[in-house]
Structure formats: C-alpha cells, structure tokens
Image 1 (cartoon, protein in one colour):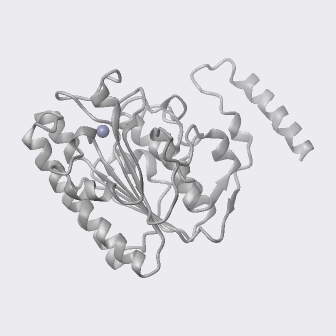
Image 2 (tube, rainbow, N blue to C red):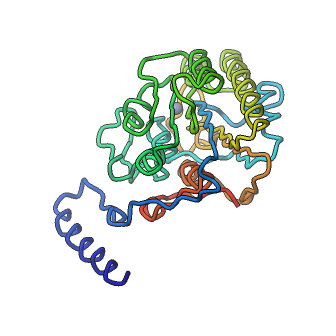
Length: 313
Ligand SMILES: [Zn+2]
C-alpha cells in the first residue's frame, strides 16, 4: 500500500510537470486513484428514478400549483427548496454537475454548447456504474437532447436520441417501467423541459398562468410515476425517488446567480424508510454521490473527485 502511494505521488509530479505549460486543462490528482469500485451486495439491486424538471422555481412548488409534488414532499424525504445551483446558472453546467458530482470548474461545461467538457476526467455516476456493474440497467429519457448526446451517450444502456416532448418523455418512461421496453430500468433518468420553455417565453413565476399550467402538467406526470414506483415497492423492489431541478428563473431568463429566485431551486429525495442528513444544505454535486451511496457502490477515484456528499444517513 505504501509503495502504491509513492507511485501515485510520482505520477502526480510527472502529471503536474507535463501539464504546467497548458493552463487551460485543469489538473485532476484523482486521475491516479484506484478506479475500481467496491460493491455492497445488499444494496446493489436497489433502484433509482431521477425526475429532472428544468427551470423549476421553488416558490412554484405549492399545494395549489403542484398538489402531487407537494404530497410527495410530505413523505419520508430529504427536501430542500433552497437547493443551490452552480454559480454558472445555465442548464448545461447544472445538469453536468448533477450527473458527475463535481462543480462546473472541474467538468468544464460553462454554457449550453458543452465545448471543452471534461467528462473523461470527471465521469458521470452512470459511467462508474456501467464500467463496473454492467448487470445494472441504466436509461435516460430527455426532452433537452444535449443531456443524452453530450453527457450520457457513452454511459447508459438505453437513451433517447431524438427530440421529444415532455408528454413523450412521460410515455417512454411508463413503457420502460411497466413493460421493461426496451430494457428493465434499474436506474432511470428523466428530464422534462417544457417548464423552462414556458419560463423563457412567458416568464418564470408562480403568477404566470403559462408557467403554472405547464407545471401542473408535469405534476400529473410525477403523480403517475410515483404511483408506478409505489407499486414496484409493493412487489419488493427497493426504489429511491429523486426530484431535482437545475435552476429557477426570474423574468424571462435565469442568468443571474445573485438572484435568489434563480439560484435556489428544488431537490426532493424520497424513500419509505431511509434516514437523511436533514440539516445538510444541498447543491447540484450531491445527487451523484447520493445515488452511488444508495446502490452501495464506492470508488476511491469518485470519492476523491467529487465535490458533493451523499445526503443519506
Ligand atoms: Zn435549465
């Protein structure tokens, strides 16, 4: 073990020397950590659904506008309506941080072009799963296509690769969950984008009818999805549900990190019996370590790289 550390140290020095002339590329000392994973056999068959809702302002999560999400938030949950965005409040950096567990200065996605992204250096949690536990079926269905095309295409067993509406995201999700078509999903990532579009077109606000009507539709999708998960739990499957957004919004945009209506958004993590770190103040990088923790997967390289922490107790 001691010898191994010396080798890591020597490799780091060489890496620093080789990279010191090129300041555009961040140095990741964790590159040299062991990238194998340890698996807890008692947890590895656990399952996770992530419901991503783009542009969900926290103060629109009310019993009136989102009755199902409100009820869901009253279950045994970790709930944070001040869930913190990246300082760079575009969608690209935030979904990248959700999926990798590192901040945008590391994965290097600074806008929605994804130019310069460093997902090889800072892989998504799905990449760790797929590379090490191939028996887990991973899937991603998104309205905003860059998530699948730029972040996840190499990391999941099944992903949608054409532009689809929120209603089709919902229908595809049901088809996976109810019919195992085309695969039985153990990890399912979903992304609904029409709320963000309503915000950009009509205004991000609980007082804007187009924004709230769109959110009410998504609330119905969430209601159905949670019912499906509840049924799966009755048949013995151990599911955790995560509902998360990438940013809020104000006026017609979401570019200003100093605006609390933009930088604070929604995270709800639900499980019937799990204890959560209720005092923890979550940010985007906490989702990836929470999922890996729930699946009993640990990796020295991931733990070294990650900026987040699991919210599971
Ligand atoms: Zn967004």
